[in-house]
Image (cartoon, rainbow, N blue to C red; front, side, top):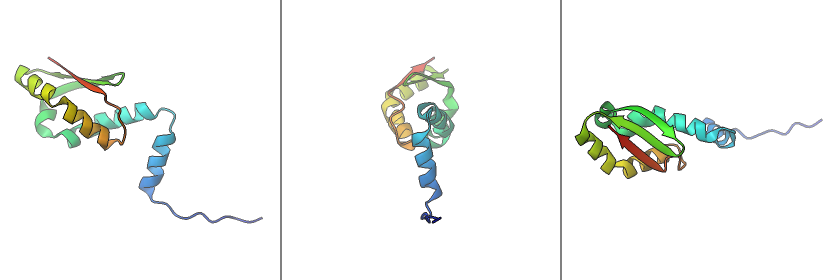
Length: 99
């Protein structure tokens, strides 16, 4: 009986491999996006936004102030790009900003 020795791998690499092979990968990454939102997007926008949720590949968020709604709407493509980059996949295809 021979035992094959495996080379050690970085934990980050193992986690990435697990996430990519996980059957509910998209749902997991959506949750990661919601969790990463404050760190990736920043305090100013985070304080204005509430009730983030996904509807398919669209991220829907609510803003009380119409001027902030307009500002976030204008930055929605940049926001989606940053969040998608944070999870290494295009999960968000569009962001809908509602008041």
